[in-house]
Image 1 (cartoon, helix red, strand yellow):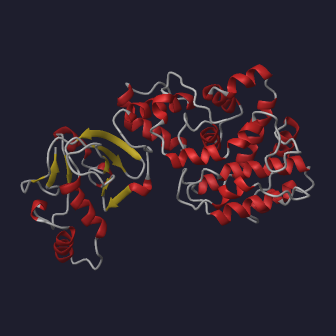
Image 2 (cartoon, rainbow, N blue to C red):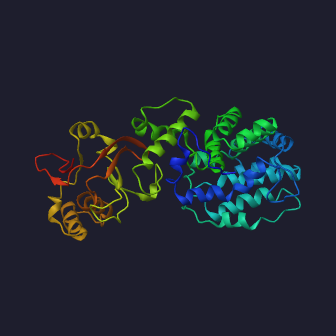
Image 3 (cartoon, one colour):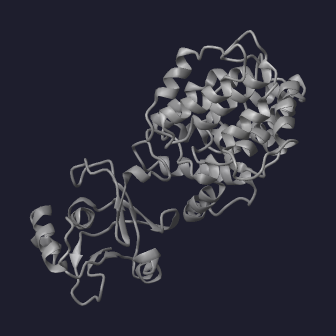
Length: 404
């Protein structure tokens, strides 16, 4: 699968901006989607057809019509109980869906993923050997690609399998002509997915990304997507609608717009590249000599929970606090900042993040860099271009380190 169709949303323009590590985890599972949308056979045991309406309906019925509620056992114990007596086709279908579900999870440990697949696969007597390429996927260390799966995503195994089985059943019920059109059109495929129900959009978001990584973001949370669009909608003249497809089309168009300015591949939200400092945050690559291309892109919080955003945006500035420190231009090293900051605050810690933020604000942000203002960890509230060097304004109250 993983085609690269171009459309009015700017797929082709945005493709080069996508990080290779995210694209890789999608391309790795292309054989599964080739079978799901093609011959319907298992990639674990190619002699068995698993992507069928009958197998999907049996899996759905076993879980949805026989729910095991309560906290007396884990969701994996419950799934094992629901699969007792299932055909080999159904057990293999559940196994490959479990594998797909955890493939894009950024924080899923290899041992945990392997255990989950093994627990499901043991229900398929005789137990088939895992292909080498799937083993390689399972061995991938956590923290390399994809989205962070929180308790909401990780704890919805039964709901995810119900939705996925319903989608497979609906897919198999389409005409051959309808399926042929959808295989190469991510928006048609998404409509089919939406027609399968959208009470749990996180699993749909995960699978549509794996199937069409050039079009969809590696983000499972619909709320996260909406917040990103809200913060950047001015780049595309405002949102085009409130439905799921309009949201994803807007994100693609925003990505295409940003790709004209950002030279390196990027994600809308990269926690591993963000450095939070108290109520402030500055993030970005620090490898570029000042005054040379490409420009940097920074995350910044204008006060606690963006409390200073209205004032700062009206004045056309970004500013940070730390009243313990005077003019940053007088410091020749991070260590000098650290010494004065620790001494003035009386803190027992190294204040490493505070020192880094102050140093970057003074020395590493450059004229022409782009700054995204944020509130909390997830909401973008604005965007601006740096047009001045850093300056110290002693007349200001709390936020005396300033850039225009």
